[in-house]
Image (cartoon, rainbow, N blue to C red; front, side):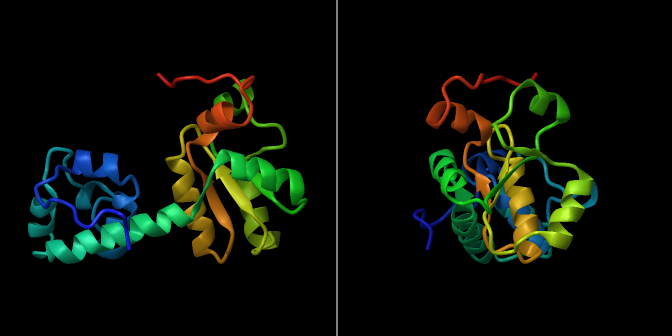
Length: 182
């Protein structure tokens, strides 16, 4: 069970996504809410309002699903320090960087593999589904979607790097420059 016991039904979706970044993925996966324009929501809309206009969903049930999904997301993450140790000690461990080509070219972790559609196909066809497959982005947001995708395709040890390359530059390699996107 999550450390949080409940979510206020009057929380705005903006605030909900700040507290639980995976909530949109969880809502879409179970209820088909928030994945596209036709099923989207407004940032200032409340969770109760979103539930009401989506077949009068049970708010407590939706809250429980968000909290459970959050706990699952936490288990799908790896810290930069844990990853550095794994990469050093496990020759099968891989680090895939899902940032843009420009971001990757500007700064990346040594040994990281730039993610392309071709690489994705190769991983899906030939990848070891038990080996560590760590996914890194800028701050650990998009990488959760990628890690969840690989978990959904049977990769037992797909992980998102908590905090992304920003965390790596603080926890592992202080010489790696940090940057902000405009």
